[in-house]
Length: 331
Image (tube, rainbow, N blue to C red; front, side):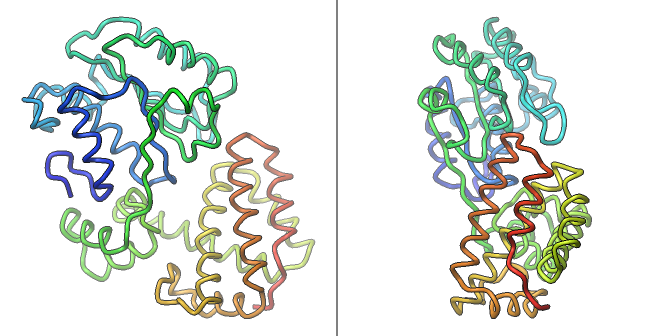
């Protein structure tokens, strides 16, 4: 872990951004991409602290000055954070216009102003187009940080104007060590959460303090097995129930992706890397009854479903279509 930036993993991204800060070469538009809970927002806020920090540049962020503390508390006048107004809601044009107004005014205290927009893949088309004007002629002091799961879901004109930083899942050992040393978890708990995290440090930290995170994961996997052994009427009923909550659909599909990767691992005799070790028996039954090519198709369907959900497709039809196409398995 970098001691100044206090980021677990993502060493190359941290080094790149830290050098930009020291050289005063942070781009006006930065796009940080990666899966949910991978650490995008943590990295973005650390960069914001570094830009607004009052310590000598080599020591930024100091994580102790008034500026750093106010970034953490959300009270710094030169930082604006934009998020969707509700779970899986849109980033709206009114929010983007507020970014333009914010960046048009000179900094109140620091040399820079920072606007951070999370979940930018959820921006409406009109909101994304409204941001283009800000990107075309940014003030010298302005920095816009966009967070998204995948650059392919964004307008090409947005992507072309921003420098990209890609974050990828961490290895299990990095997550385990961080949970033990920084969050003081017992070795067995740290090892289990590191395995279940899929390399997503944000999820692991949340699970360390909120037992519901693991329960939600286990519930999602149990639902997958229930659907696989069910007939059409039961699948329609499950789809109707699941589709009532867009956020739950996204979370469930993401966990199902991990489960199907485990199925593929069993089909290729590399089961030592299984995420859901506790469900190995059921996963093996799926692996024995479904071909590897069929597993790959399911993974593609889940990925397509998540992308469609981000574009606000009809949730009921989307969930029904996917659940009805899952292969039947005797469990």
